[in-house]
Length: 136
Image (cartoon, rainbow, N blue to C red):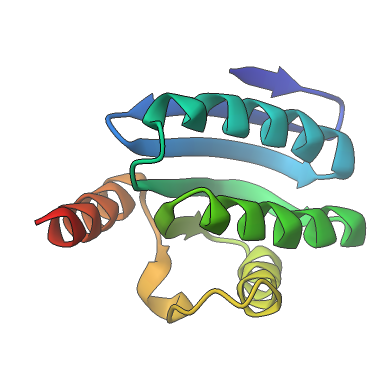
């Protein structure tokens, strides 16, 4: 799935039971609405199995306040749909601060610093290890 508007871009892909969302630009409500629809269509294929999520947002500047609120709701829904662990590739100090706030507001019981990476490969390794440890 790929969606682009004048403010930003998102590409959603799947590697085994890991959903990878690559965002760029500024995140706003329209972009997140399209992402949310595609995300929940994608995870139906897991049929209730545990899965992991990576947000590669290394090219994101920031999210609008409305988008930030929507990300809290999406995070809640992901957890209710068996998302075991999430990882974030972030470089913008504003985006890092926003994601930390989102995780707190979504009451995700994880150490944000443990889920924060500066490249996609490190995030993939982290998610794969967490999923493998939980499934064994």
